[in-house]
Amino acid sequence: MDVIDLFSGCGGLSLGFEKRGCTIRKAVEFDQSIAETYRKNHPEVELIVDDIKNIDQSGVFRKGDAQVIIGGPPCQGFSMAGARIREGFIDDPRNYLFKHYFNVVKTVKPQVFVMENVKGITTMQGGKIFAEILRIFTDSDMLEGRSYHLFQRVVKAADFGVPQKRERMILIGTLREDVDFESLWETTRREIMQEEPHYFDVVNVRDAIGNLPKVTEDGKIANPAPVTDYQRYLASGKEMLTNHTQTKHSKIAVDRMRRVANGENFTSLHEDIKSVHSGAYGRLCWEEQAPTITTRFDTPAGGRFIHPTEDRTLSPREAARIQSFPDDFVFYGTKTSICKQIGNAVPPKISYFLARFIEKII
Image (cartoon, rainbow, N blue to C red):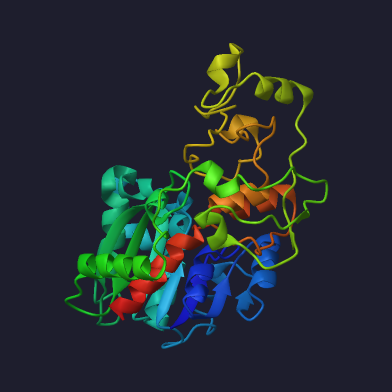
């Protein structure tokens, strides 16, 4: 299958489709530093580094360019008041990211599109936003005569053998009629299990990062031997791994982390910790799954991201493991950019499943 990846980020969605043998024809990413990571890990892809509003109708995309369009337009733009939604949703500038995703789908007319978003999109504005998205993709007048048949599901990363309590809404549209989505979903799952019996196993933090050695100044470590099925799945043949660095925490932060036990958070410190996150200064447990990896996994106050036994937050390599990125994937850029790349990505194990599922739909 030929694929176009919009809002590609560092390429979590692309990775799963590539692993299935798909060809990513074009990818679009606005952020220069994030695009650098995508480019170096996907050198064969035509990467367009630009704001999608500049290119969605510029001739870059043409009908038939790809059978599949994937991507997750950020949800910040979905901000319209309920009463006005039917009249102006697609034209409201705050929704431009979604609008231009829609425009590319309308132009290319792929057999299937995949839209990934936060679970909460279904309840924003009392559900009116999501209802309008569904309406637009099924309106044949807006799509030049041929609308999409839709399938939606909230997916849990843990159900795909990812050691993380991440939940996301997946919306899939196809031009095919009478697709039994639920049956194809189960068939896809069975076939993967036949090929890789441990693919959907429950995985905990130890299974994911337990074999990683101490962090280093430059992030480079000798490639450790995998000891779990999950580690074997992500393992690289390279001599060295990268991105295994730690954030330099203040003495106050280190002292606080030292006083937090497994499963505890800032409430055990009995201090006035100013954080909007309920899991601030939370320490991970080896035998449990991690919470959702966010863009602030390097910050003790950002959530439950303290290493199970060390007084530091997760390294980028550890966070990438928990997101199911393969060990040979290298992240480039500043610390802030790398955290953003990992935290915003779709876990590649989920995207691989989606690639196989969409293959069946087509």
